[in-house]
Image 1 (cartoon, helix red, strand yellow):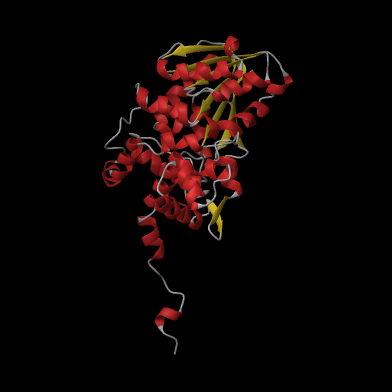
Image 2 (image 1 turned 45 degrees about the horizontal axis):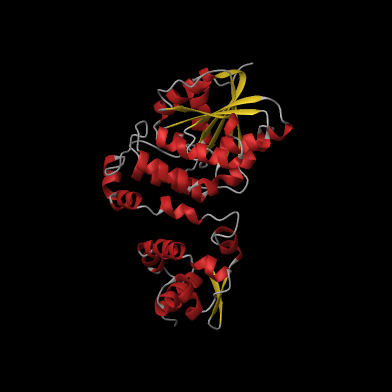
Length: 342
């Protein structure tokens, strides 16, 4: 008779690994801060040379790189490390697609504190630590977001620009709500020399967007309106309004309040372009979109990841006649296009 341990019964491995998962985040953040991936990409691939390159101890460098190898960020042959394809593209700072700057936002102490208090958030039904009302200024948080997260947006920004026909060069006026780093509107302006962009956000955040617009060579066609998207004068007559990753911060009535203002700002036949994490109706798939609800529970008063059916209903309630869904290439997000009556 086989012993019980020889079978395929339940094990505590998933529990153990999940309770220790914070160590993976810490290891990746440390490697980014030390610039391990860039150093290896430049040829410093053994513990002694790599340690000297990143100004760390040889022992610490070896242990960290072995750990990163276990979790698929590096490969190892003998005592030589190499980048995986994923790390070479997204973590070597020499790569134009490098996302290492995201650690400056996703790894902040403020977000970690929100999740340390998750038990309380579950009991309350919203954050118990952070400023969860995102209709009010929070310059430190959103400037960090604007300076850290821009590289992550590139695939979706290009997808949206293509979706609205930016390369065709037709004159258009684009409203970018909660613009942050501004890269969605800037990408449209780069692809369409006849596009005029108006960005709305808090003043210190708009400074980052203007820096990016200047670097992209589109500052002359990039205007700003400072303040809350719920209160600022948005203007009118827009062909498109961009709402990228904003609705998940709020409850449904607040989302409708914002979308009603957007509807009024669009010209007849104008379109609202929403980029969001949109889970399936079962709310447990696909994984990245479905698990985003927990992030909103921890960091907002009432935010959520809404399903397409919920978005469709909200947008219809404020006057949009039709909403279609478009999976965003290269991103775990979905683009929703909502049309006003012509």
